[in-house]
Length: 133
Picture 1 (cartoon, rainbow, N blue to C red):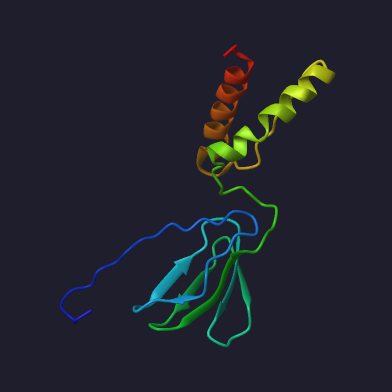
Picture 2 (tube, rainbow, N blue to C red):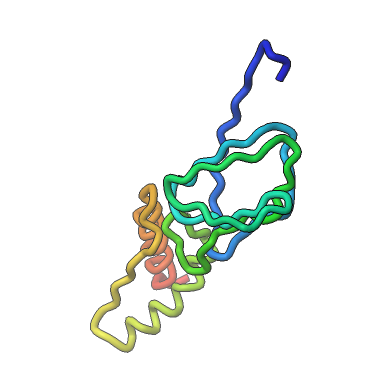
């Protein structure tokens, strides 16, 4: 920043349950806003703080971001499952279906329509696994 121009970079950071970032710093000020969930943070030598949905935080230029992590080890509301994670469930769901009259799968990632997207992907994987190869 030279006083004549201000550039703003918007970044959407999402952590899987228990996910974290390595210790780092930024050359510029950082203003953060927690869109959803809870963020566990520790900057410099200050005590660790948990920020929740709607909270804001500030990091000064050069501050050392020692901890940046999802405060939950189970919450996935703001998480989009990867193909491999969904594939892990296909044999389990098929096994349950063979033992019962029906299986219902509830997605635990309803933020930003992620559940709808992942449910469609999972349905496709389940159908694909049923088809003869």
